Amino acid sequence: MRSLRMTRNIVVCSCFLLLLALLAGGCLTGSGESADIPSLSALWKSAAAGCASAGGLVSVSAAGDVNFGDGVTPSLSSGGMSYPFSGVSPAFESTDLSFVNLECCISSTGSPVSGKEFTFEGPADSAEALSIGGVKVVSLANNHSKDYGTAALVETFGHLKQNGVAYCGAGRDSSEAYSPAVLDAHGRKVAFLAFTAVIPDGWPATATTPGTAITWDHKKVAQSIRNARSKADYVIASFHWGIELATSPNSEQRDLAHLAVDSGADLVLGQHPHVVQGFELYKNRLIAYSLGNFVFSPPDVESSRSVMLMTLMGPGGLVEAKVVPAVISGCRPVILNGSAADAWAGTIAAYSKALGTTMNVAGGRGYISGGASQKL
Image 1: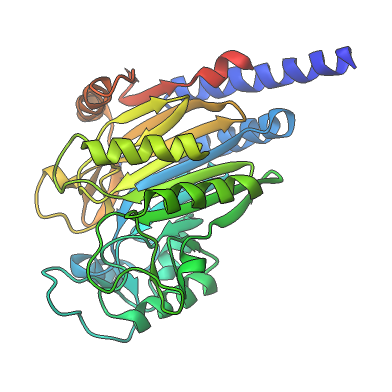
Image 2: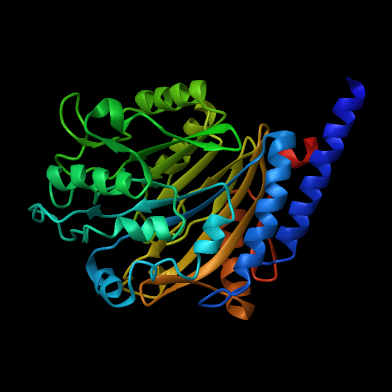
């Protein structure tokens, strides 16, 4: 038995060293079309599969707000459904699971709700873009999911299901909205939950009406995460929160993030500010306070700066995270390289340092090492 354990540890350590080499090598270095991403995809999949079988590791990639309405819709008409994620889909596919926040409904029905300055609706066939792009699960817990009414939200559920994209944070009633989407990775169950702190009138799901999961009742948020923890190996919690255009999280964000981790979340993903905020390592669980915009029609330079997050997690928490700088051009994310990548990664590292977390920058990429790596 001791010999078997030693063999297993050697396999896990070897896998971990290989993954570190891949991360440090900065393989994700493509430009607009990212020609080097496929090599990362093959290498990561090969190494992660070996690690997963030996040590229960799971890799998850994530990005921020995806909106197929507004100025993005014409790009879908001209470029097709493969256009929005054409520069980044191999990176999504290189990890076990991939997540974004769907900042619109996907519908052919309804009309803009009254009293809102901005309302977003993607074409009825735009869920296909998520599937083609390698996105496995989306959050619907945000302030735009019911922009065209309850019927449009329910129609969104159907389009996502038809395209094999899971969703969390909304449902036909509160029971579904607060329940996780549970996906499989190497036989491990990964539960995704989502909540919004930005709550227009009529948004919350009730016992009998469709809507979103909200953050007003922190005890309910914590209990939802604990319930998910009881049925999954990993729990990922998404929050739509914070102040628009603020580059640092407020106290409410930090309190909720820590509550999520204390309740059993292994990874916390945030959106809504429309700009990137820093990363925090809390109890060896990574918190991304805001991943900014991703597929969007940004109104200014600040909100066009984007990021991709690639994480490797084990039973003890974060093993390693890779932060990939990007910029939105033509409504789609383009991975940065060279001096532009170095500068943007350096800025994100400074945001993270203010939160007590070290993000090392090498080759235009950011790296956050977790304590779990010390146990392998």
